[in-house]
Image 1 (cartoon, helix red, strand yellow):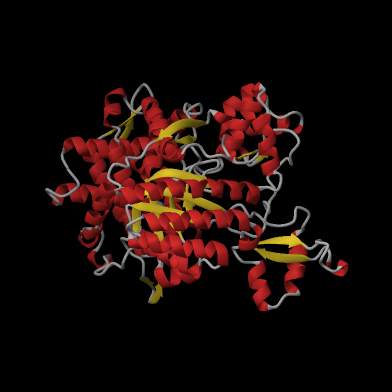
Image 2: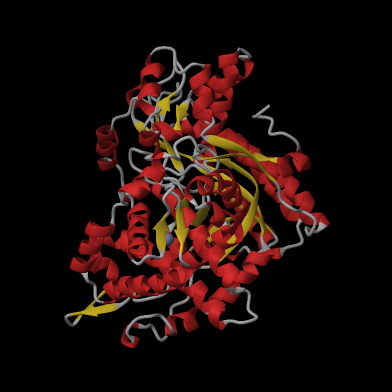
Length: 579
Ligand code: ZN
């Protein structure tokens, strides 16, 4: 699962979609419009400090960047059968419109605009991204596949619906004519054999260079998986991976298969572990039970022994490729998706800190200049922004998870049903604030430095970030949960609007409001109070006119970033596919 921090409903708000769609039917958008579409992604250099890497790891890193380029190559093939030919042609087109298309193609890794519902931005291509990408024959209907499935035995059916096969129509001359036109499953290890072999060799070279045993193990097992098409053992090795040089590489997410969601796209994130943040996480984890014991709820709802948490890694990205770099950039991901591995080893969450810093700089900073009161703007802080994200993730694990309602053993999710996500996201936000305040007050000398200055930074940065979330609408769980918080804080006087339409935080009132809202949300979960949740979302789940007005003034601010991987380039040169 992947978190991009931008809902894909953006296109409606930007008003570009309709124009784009009209234009694509004829010649496609012209240079000016392409530039406008591209400008939604602010170009940003991503640099990573390699000075602490061992010599072996540094050389291994260069090999891994080269392997990552191959992922871009496979991904172009996976996304659309015509992608490579089109890209080769585009690269030769040096006209002004040709250059603008090249640039936007590379951002989207296809001729379809991710921010505009995957509509074509140039002529001579299908109007929309094919639902089945290049995982199924272009002319296959859903029913054809389902009919074919019924003719298969259990093992064949598992292959047909598996993550790591493409579905092809048989038409090779060596196959009897009577079978032509029938569907068949082809393993990735066959379909992408040449590229996978190239990557396997690079991974093995990197494995020889690194001095970290867990990385060695992951790289050698993953290389074997590229050849055998069996990813299980290497997924397990990835769960155990704990090294300065951190990498995620392979077929993972199935979002691009919009017919069935069966087929995995290749993606890669070549990362360096962030040791300072990892230490902070450890310190937070050590304080979780203490925070739980002091949650502002009836003592009988507190959990005397909170369960173990999924591991979290904080990293900085040197290179992202394939499915990991098209359209809106990934901010964090949870993997693996293979349920057998999850059942046995759990899953791991990886947070891309420098990617989030880039998003912060290019979107949240300009937003804050418009929505925060002048004298509050100095309090915007990436450190607190990121620390709150960590706290949000951790506090998903706090509060009631196993509850009893009228004698029945149940869970908040079961009781709150379709409202659960919005309530749970709001809970993680405010309980995260509560936890940080609790640590500021009670963990003197710990990693969370308190004091008036830091409190102002935490709450002001949080206020600015609510605009970033709400910009993309209030239909989704995150947006709805955020609207609830903002309205609650305004009702308590913790957030107020100034005569010039900007917003400011009242810290003492904010601390009380955070405590109150934490109590309300957690109690709702503890009692499985569906009606209470419904009432809260109905009355507070939509932002008010003064907020709406501020949001409408943010339309020209970039939606996301286009990363330029400077460190990767210094180390290994330019991706030959990009040249
Ligand atoms: Zn969350």
